[in-house]
Length: 99
Image (cartoon, rainbow, N blue to C red; front, side):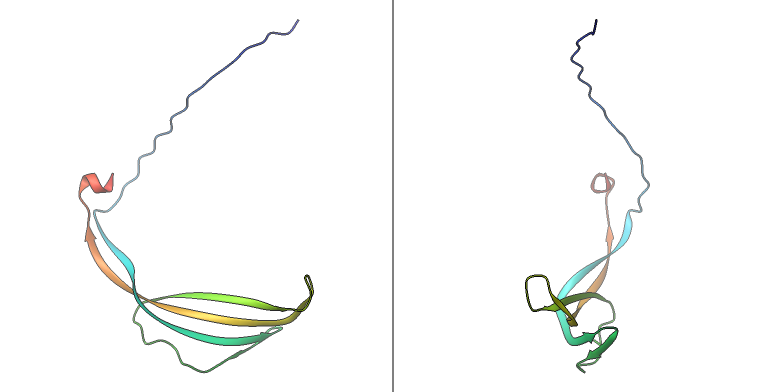
């Protein structure tokens, strides 16, 4: 003989974590510099535009492979490197904001 039952449960998890109320936050300024290049196997050719003169920046790389048919790719990639300028600011949180 087998018993039938319907069970419901509610589970709560709590976690405590320490946080500094004074932090340095990075924010994008909107300025960016873009460099292009071609990659053939492991050999990469960058079109010269130089390195950005930003003090703080974030780097984003995008690669697109050269495709002939739906699933046939050449060993050639077009690369795009985006440098986005970041501005660091000091932020002070209250205890309520930190929670």
